[in-house]
Image (cartoon, rainbow, N blue to C red; front, top):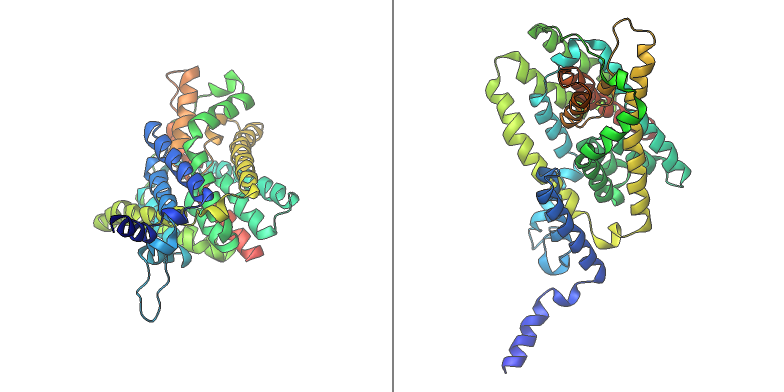
Length: 379
């Protein structure tokens, strides 16, 4: 009787339905959790993604977490959470919060730095070309290439449109390389610059007036919206958040965007991405290829910013430290901080952080515009 009861109970559990692929994915999620905590590698992002992976690889027919609603059932919790991703709600909300946190005065004090943020997008298009050469379709190649922008929400936004079957792999690659910035960025910048170039000093940035910041936010929305209309969900929300920050009259709204909305949307987005990392989709040979192409995109984006700065210096009277160009990817503010650390290794009194923040925040706009270009051409 006891044995029959136990067997009857065991039949209701999910143990018997766990596949070998599920076990591998649970192992990967466990490694991501350990690394994110022990190495402090983007834990705010990787922990929710890893938990989503765990939830997705407990046999979903038993948990009901991802079940769609029917006439007689309400549907699973993760079904409704992932709807925010399916309906493309989370990435724009995250950009709203990022805008409320971002100070564009570093860019406005020296507008020429915006070109460095644009130059850093070269890796996006190089990886796009390589992905197409490896046999991916143009839309999937675009989703892979956008990893080079070092912008997780934008990568997810494009992957949702163009490559939903690879969204978990693309997101994990993007956030993993952002977490590896301290390891990847310094050797690339050092390899492409001389000690003399790394010691270049720049004048302190000028004081930017509030009206300049407000005009910039409005003008950016109009310019990007008219030139690349599909970029407006991201750029528009970014600049709305920034306008709330800089207006001086909406402090509560800016705080809500930068804390409560941003944090909530980040948790929901990362859970949704992790929830799409099912074994039958994730464990494919193409996943490793995507990881490799993402690395190429990331490295060439950093290199593009450095090399374009050196090119500009051929014509500029007041030289720009090429390490500033290396911060042209969207990983705000980590990329700028790493540029400062490399500069301090050569000269502890050289302070380039404020200058590096210019192309760093420009990279956020640049990646959104690059995504908009893909959507316009391939959408």
